[in-house]
Each structure stands twice: as structure tokens, then as C-alpha cells.
Length: 102
Image (cartoon, rainbow, N blue to C red; front, top):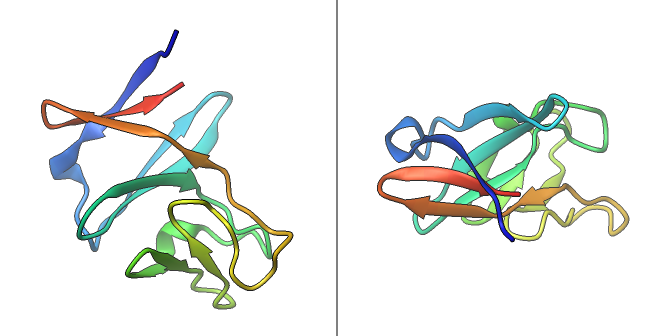
């Protein structure tokens, strides 16, 4: 059985302002909005620990602001190191709200 946890209202996220929150034992995640979707990923770069909410988006690619590592927002896969991958979280949008699927 799927469980949903309310995260925020969609108006709290713009393409230039990601939403940061904690889930399960203070795991910090960040939600990004692109032109066509919302994505939730862990908020730490596996390379050097930078906060990814300070990075920038080009299409569906997140670029870390510290060293330029690139990540696919949908899969979490790093484009610079095939062994590096971010944890991604499935989302549900309903009634103007965003929920994480647990």
C-alpha cells in the first residue's frame, strides 16, 4: 500500500526557487521544477557534499555549483561518473499540492 506525505503547495516552487525539506531521519531532499515536471532528489552532491539546491538546471539536467557535476533529474544518474547516483523520490501532484510517495 502506497503512503503519501504532504511536502508543499506547487506555488512554493518556481523554476528559479527549489523547495527544500527533510524526510525520514532528517534526510534532506530538494524539489526542482522544470518546464514540464517536478523532481525530488537528495540535496547533497556525492562528489564533494555541496548542497544541490544551489545548483542550476538546464532542461532536465542539474549542474552542481561547486565542480559542475551533472545529474539527470529523472534518474539521479551522474553524467560525469557512472558510479555516482543521487537518490530520487517519486512525487504525486494533486489539488495543487505535492506529495512524496513513501
